[in-house]
Length: 269
Image (cartoon, rainbow, N blue to C red; front, side, top):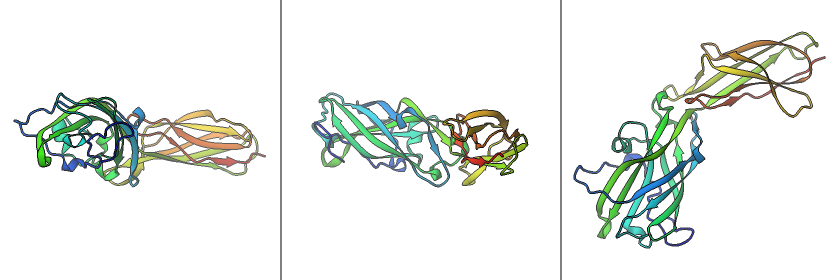
């Protein structure tokens, strides 16, 4: 537990892995602790690939019941988490994204604001259908003497975060160099993370923009929009008019992140 930035410290399990969370019994009493204002990754989707961990910021507010105080940090605990399912209790047992590096401070005797980070590993996403909006659950506990749990509660709070599959694009423009007025063939591929196969696979039937930036210009403009093939292949032709840079740009889907290819410079003479 880390001390607060101002005021009393707030009890919080900062490295609680979801696999360690257990649902309370049917007879368990509510804690009276509420968690609100949960914001993950500043409200933006979290895009996950096949190998790298994604670490994003999160923030939330804890509201304590009568009898509890931010001045007594060892008497309570509140831990948000994400789940993809129909039940917060069932979701708590899913070994998914987890919270670390919590830092809380007391706003009042009953309210504390917290910041933390949420960590996403590709192997925590077991199906490509996990690319969806995940719900937010929270585990709260009240403690008695000798760290015994007096009450424990798992429930859903408002909000959520969209998890998307990382996408990549490549480009090749040929021939290089080319005479003005001749045809340039621009090819490439659009792929995205496959969390089952643990590699990048082709994105079919995606609308991808071919963009061009003339040498010396500051911005790209869209020349045309092309549909990817069943394997994610991209191909089109354009007329050579000036020296410049070519690239593919994909705007993303609700399941898939955006992708912009590296650029390919073509000398027109």
